[in-house]
Image 1 (cartoon, rainbow, N blue to C red):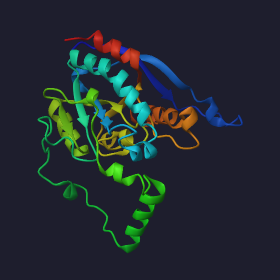
Image 2: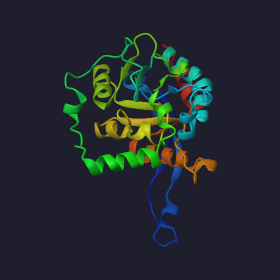
Image 3: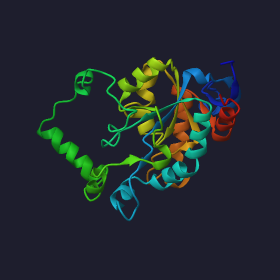
Image 4: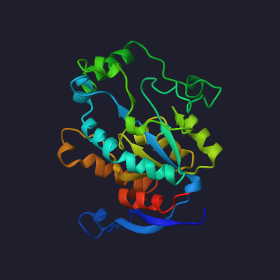
Length: 267
């Protein structure tokens, strides 16, 4: 398709000024300019957009995963127009899954490698101390012993993020890379939950895909972050995650700009 541009946020991580008290405060910081986006070589990656039930049905999920009310609101209000615009523009939509098996029954999923995951990625060998530390983390760090039974019930696609037609599904980075290679994709725009944990570091996330050479971007307002006791009120982790994406992985698009760009490129 002809080269098209849209407003693109980036972060200028230079120049520090050693003559001032806090040298990094001289960085250029957040800026925006018009940059090209080739829809033929870009995919919208919808990652871990889950429905885990309601607080009444699965209180353990909501006690452990504080962002669920925010992710539900985004899935219900942001995803429908975003995904409609992507599909109308014939932008490749890929789905990255994780957790329980809620996806292998769907036609968009198939094994993309003959090698089982344990052969591609050799795992640590547990011993007694290892098991004790893992048990401690599950009970005292996350998700908590009282919440584990609800977590173990698994999850499903949020209705707004259900794969459609021939949209493909990947369960790990190797599968996602295989789909991208087959479709000629080199730029991945991630939406889903949560930006600072799963979208960055889970299988199929930005860390792995950046190592493979992909540009990995996101859409502000189409994701949220895992917050903690100290950051939750002001969603400081979300702000930090946008910065990390912009410096280490790709770019940040404003939701309205991104949807308008797709709507102007309906094919």
